[in-house]
Amino acid sequence: MEQLSSNTISELGRIFGRESVLTDPGDCLPYGYDNSRRQAMPQAVVFATEHQQILSLVQLCNREQINLIARGRGTGTTGATVPDRGGIVLSLERMNRILEIDPDNRLARVEPGVTNQTLQQAAAEHGFFWPPDPTSSAICTIGGNLAYNSAGPRAVKYGTPRENTLGLRAVTGRGEEIRTGVSTSKGVVGYDLTRLLIGSEGTLGVITEAILKLTPVSEAKQTLRASYTDMHTAAQAVSSIMAQPVTPCALEFMDGSAIDIVRDFSGIQIDPEVGAILMIEVDGPAHCLNDSVAAVAAAAKNTGLIELHTAETGEEIAQLWKARQSLSPALRKIAPKKINEDVVVPVSRIPQLIDGLQQLSADSGVRIVNFGHAGNGNIHVNLLTNPDDPEQMQQAHRCLDATFDLVLGMGGTISGEHGIGLEKREFIEREIDPCTLRLMTDIKRQFDPAGILNPGKVFPASDS
Image (cartoon, rainbow, N blue to C red):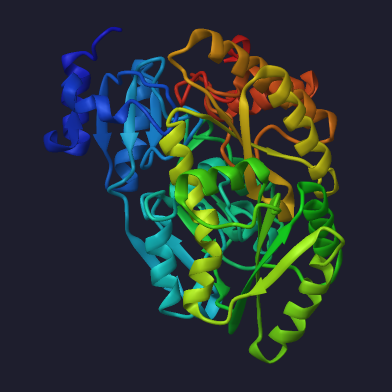
C-alpha cells in the first residue's frame, strides 16, 4: 500500500490540527477493524470535530484520489468500516454534541458521534425517547445507526431510523454540502434523499448532522414472558399477537438451541419442557394498560403454552429478561468467533425458517442458535464455528449460503439491520435484480463520481 504524500499529510494537519491526525501504523491499527473478524490498515486516521473539516477532507480526497471511510465506534458486524482498500479513516466519535432538544416540536438535532444512550438520556429528561435501540446502544453512535438503519427491539412498534429521522446534513462524495428532508412532521418537496442516505453505509455521503423525530415516553409498561413447548407454537403466538390491535413495543424470542445454551452456560433454571420463549413488552397510557396486556396475553395463549408470567416489580422484570440477556455472553464464551447473521422473513414464515435452519444444522454438523425480534421476523442466526478449523469453516460457509437461499425463498431479506458491508456483498445479487442494482450503481456515481467513499462495500466486487 502506498503511503500518503508528505503534502497530503501536511494538508490533513492543516484541516484537523496535527494532534488529530494519526499516521503511525501502531496508532492507526485500532481504527482498521470493526466487530467483524475483518481488519485492514488505514493509511491515516483523522478525527473531525466540525462539518467544515469534513467538507475540506472530502474535497482533498477527491483531488488526490484517496479512499475515505467514515467510522463511528466500530460496532458494526459486516466489515463496512474496514479500510480493505487503504485510504483515510474518518473517525466521527468526537463530533458528539447534542445541538438541540426541542420538546415542543418533538425533535432533536445531533452530530453523528453522539451515542444512542447519550441521546436517550438527554431526551428522557424532557419525557421523550428516540425509538431505535440497538443492543449496543451504550456505545454505538447515531451516525452508525443511520448508516446501517439499525433499529432493535422497539422497531416492531416504533419503526427504524428511516421512520424516525426528519432530515440530514451531509457531504457527498463530490465534496458538496447537501441538506435533506425537513424539520417538520410532514414534507413532500423533492425526492426523499434522507431515506436514501440512511442505510447506505457511507457509500454516498458523510452525515454530519441529523434531525431526529422524538416520541413521548409511555406512561406505563408491562413485561411478560411466555414459554412454549416448541418454536412452532411460539411462532403461532407471534402471528396471533401481531394480528390483533395492540402492538407490543418489544416481542423477542429464543429458540430451543438458544435456551439450551442459557441452561448449560449461564446456570439459569428453565423448565426442561420449554422449547421456545417469547419476551413481550406492552406500553401505553396507564389507564388502559391492563386491557392492552390482557389482549396481548390472550393472543399469546395456544396449545403449546407452558407458562405465561407477568412481571409486577422491577426485580421481576430483570429476572424475566435474565435468560435473554445471558444469551449473548454465553455465546461469546463458547463461540467467540461465531458467524452472526440477521435475516428477516414474514412473521408467518418464522416456523418454516426455524425448521429449515434445524435441517441445515443437522445436514452440515454446524450448530445453529436463533434468537431475535420475532415481532417483525428479524432473526439473528448464529453459526457456532471455529475459524481456525478450515474444514469446519467450509461447512459453515456452505450452511450460510443455504441459509440465504432459504430466507430469500420465503420472500425475506438477507439483512435486517446489520447492513451488507464486505460480509454480504457477494450475496446481494440474489436479492436485488440486475436492473435495480444497475440503478443503484448509477446513484452511487452521481453522489460519488470518483468512487472514493467506502469503496468495495455493499456492491458485488465486480461492480465496486
